[in-house]
Image (tube, rainbow, N blue to C red; front, side):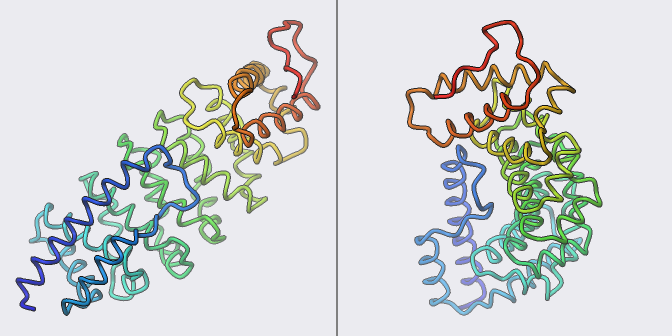
Length: 330
């Protein structure tokens, strides 16, 4: 196939991919926090790609090299760089070319792209990093050693762009979940404080991503649970649950229950420090339990009951106001 025909085909292919990705993201907006941050490609997309590769002679690694070189080229304009970055995201996600990306020098472009003035380029770069390191300890190690996690944390801490903050958390999550060195570096950069502070950002999908990340790493690591607890994660999660705009009550309660086991009588200690916060939490639990009483949300009801047991077994003497007493657990 002639070079012009190849490029024309690739342009059509990537337009098709971008269109379908947008549709998938819109459909998944209500379930932003999932067990994995990088979704596998659909059967339809896989078939399209396989057919495309069978009917043309194109070397994906050579395309990676071209994209990387064009992004480095000062003569290439920003719009073109976005297109080449889109293509990089496409190939690394669809064909599992993460190791090849680093072998041919892809690491060199990541730091400048994360520092770019265009938020859309930074968003694409966060997505690329998440794809590269997802369940890949070889690539996780490269990113950890490069110091890019510090740049991602800076984005979470300083950016006012909701999409960019969320994508940065997605990349951090893919980098540290199940990877001890990534978690050690998170400690080094005071990442727990940054992530806990971000819980107060009024961005539901970001809050869901953060709950998923905190719950996952604190469930698998007693040390990370201790660090998040000592930096006020339990209090911030309870504030999130108490908020009328809480994005996902069950998800938040799961994370609260995980953090409450960081030390004996953690909720009692919190009640001593901030009795008003815990009393409001008790009231919100009662209200939520009433809402769910005739529903089939058994998992969330069980979470509420477990937390209420912890509260009644360790909390200070109850207030004299009957409206603030815990309802009997049914």
